[in-house]
Amino acid sequence: MFPEYDVIVVGAGHAGCEAAAAAANMGSKVLMVTMNMNTIAQMSCNPAMGGVAKGQIVREIDALGGQSGIISDKSMLQFRMLNRSKGPAMWSPRSQNDRMRFSEEWRNTLEKTKNIDFWQEMVKEILVKDGIVVGVKTNLGLEIRSKAVVLTNGTFLNGKIHIGEKSFGGGRTAEKEATGLTEQLVELGFESGRMKTGTPPRVDGRSLDYSKMEEQYGDENPSKFSFTDTKQLTRQLSCWITYTNEDVHGELKKGFEKSPMFQGRIKGIGPRYCPSIEDKINRFAERNRHQIFVEPEGWNTVEIYVNGFSTSLPEDIQQQALTKIPGFEKAKMFRPGYAIEYDFFPPTQLNSTLETQRIENLYFAGQINGTTGYEEAACQGLMAGINAHNKVHYKEPFILKRSEAYIGVLIDDLINKGTQEPYRMFTSRAEYRILLRQDNADIRLTELGHKIGLASQDRLETLEKKKVNIKSLVRLLSKYKVEPEIVNPGLEELSTSSIREKVNTLHLLRRPEIGINELKKIDRQLSSMLSSYSQEELDQAEIDVKYESYIDREQKLVEKMVTLENYKIRTDFNYDGIKTLSIEAREKLKKVKPETLGQASRISGVSPADLSVLTIYMGK
Image (cartoon, rainbow, N blue to C red; front, side, top):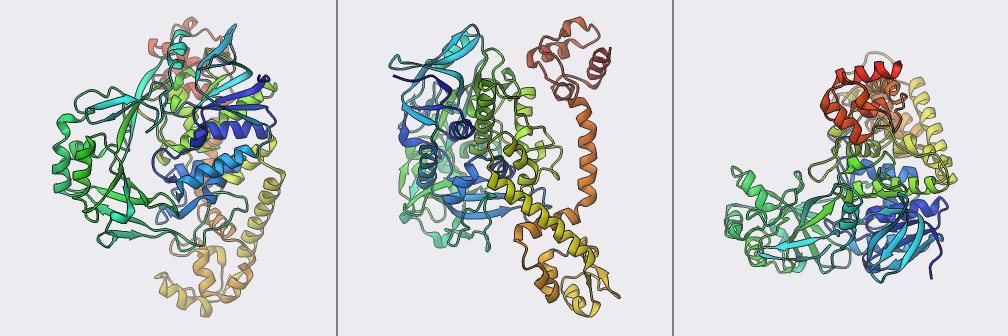
């Protein structure tokens, strides 16, 4: 019934979609197996992409030739560049998206990819022969053969939904859980655990009073995620902000005795940085209000996502508490919020390629690895899809360093440190934030994406043109000198000191109060000279000029670290043979099996002294 596939992808969430698209676009014959073809790339939680650090990941996915940025651009309702008041390392793109259009665009994209087949059914187990995965077995008993398998099961592995004192099996509301796989993987020697996440109630937007809320507009000149020619937004939907209060908190506390979280019925660990509303009230008792973001779900629906009100309290308590929020007095609930528990597998059981250490050619990506968030899942799917394709076609593994991408930071963190709670990406997790900006993701990664056969020739040519233009722009700025009588009035308006003689434009641009856009406003001749450059090129040149010394400093730190990354460690290395290693270091090194000294240095429990011993021993 089925041919043998190069890669089978189990699951069609954000990780599964990127994995299938990457492997297929690189030339593999791919089968995507999902329990429901109608929920491909479902935005199970908030209808948004990007945000702090997450927006950088979406741009990196796009730069490599992935699809999430393009899909996000095509389904946008609103765009905002977060943290504009801070330095460029913190600028983070975020979009509000049309939930239904996002899913539709992903399905259309996958169906137009010639190397992808689809099958709607549950996968009950993987097929293994001599320690190598050779396919999957479905609920109907069908055995489908492949050279590699990527598991992207999301929250479906033995998923259990909680609403107050009620609990039932499910991977998402109105969708059944996936069973069988966890039990088989544990039998094969894998370690598993339980995590939880939650989602807020959805309400009818027609029942809300927006006059009592603060309107949150999109950017005046919205940007986008993709470095391709996706269309810029010309129309945007507003979001809204309101707040809980002591009356809301009082209503919620009435349900605490029925809370599955407080009564111990939920055993899984939840995300620290996205707690439920009852957890916020309990942990931050001194606060008399919490922010609520009121987010539209699409252009053609009245459904509203109540961001900040994630809860698993009884549905009647949820309804009563909602009506105490300003603007929600007459709110009608479409469906209640809930918590969901699911199985995951600690990611220290993976190699840097996301291939499992126990079973060859088996890859894990997404929430199965203990992460949370669409963006974190999507980038893992992309990397697993790339590496599954490379493995079955006898090509080199594709691994991104911590100095090359947030994706590299995320995977390195997971496989070396593991995670005791749902892992979420933050800018603070990266040592080289000034290098890993959202604006230069294509400069960092598109050549790599093209080299492995994922980023197109058009993308590469666009990048080369951009690099030439930025160099030309910096050269122009270095030669052009501004006249005091022309720019001084504008400089005074910007509260920065005037000049007494002609000065180099770069000299002015290095002042913190002045950007290229300000210079264009106060010097018409310069504005005319810069009119042929795109805003993205202008921004990039400005960052390169303003932060040149910081960028150089970070680059030197990277070069020092590369030395350790060049020391390879054999997979069969005998750590027990080095008696001067600490017992903890020996245990951690044997468990993680680092591939380089650099990776070994980042394992929790391996001290600088242990690293010195290891370095000396390897030198011998």
